Length: 88
Image 1: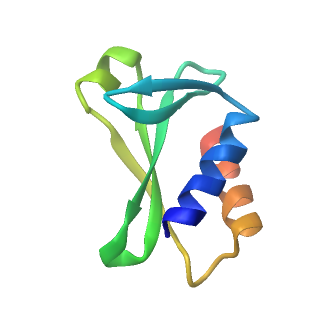
Image 2 (image 1 turned 90 degrees about the vertical axis):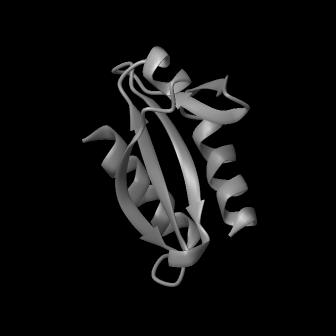
């Protein structure tokens, strides 16, 4: 899971501005939303977490998006599904 998380973050770096908040890799979307990816070992999934501002992100006030299951999606499918979720 860690490799997939790192690979997805690397791809997000090419698309969004990168921020480090509370020692975590975060990304700033065009509408000002702060996102971060979190691996959930118990679900074998990755979730995108959303904060509406940098201040909320610093307070760890993220809301969860959909779960992306490693067994259901390869890296490319997962990345495309994540971009669709982020940009909708």
